[in-house]
Image 1: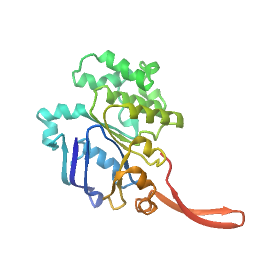
Image 2: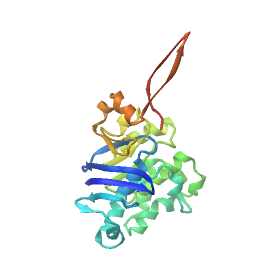
Image 3: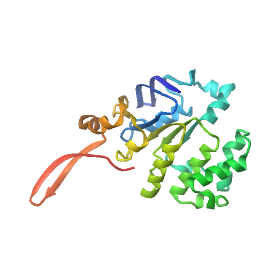
Image 4: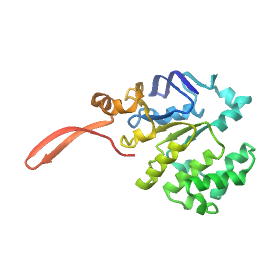
Length: 257
């Protein structure tokens, strides 16, 4: 579904991604890991066509994605319907007067049939039906995230890119999200800092190192058990512990959203 070749990007003197290569197959559920500043969010925005990379190529279903193709031609509408990005901060995605209008916005823009049914279906699945007539800004952070997710799914994308989707969720809602995403019959690429949650979101991991190169592409469990790679990716840290009158240091993984 996705082929990334020699992808590099930066903003001014700041490098964000360097010579990144990987592929995503239809139906895969993949976790994207890396420390803050490694380039995870930038990569998702490039895959969604929101940023044009400085170098390299992104292909979607065999066709190279370019700014021109996303502005004109038959790929534009199909790509915008089939590839969706959930931002870490839902406030940047919500702008309609009601939750109903928020979920209906995408189907209306795509001129899809059965808008009322789509809204009702996805609102029920994510648990926001009671809020359909409320303004999105009156909801909690977790409720906003669910509305943003429903708004994307209402157009029935094939590829869903999720940037820290559990960041605004409490433990119960995080558990719900894991189960919900596992049951979605679409391709998923999800970023997270929570290494305890990561294996629940995918069996394959793409890991960006601090040098913005791809440090690991493969099964997630061996990576989580490799202290050297965790340290290299800045996903593990050492600090002092006191036990009675003794003090020692050992490695810990970063286990937060």
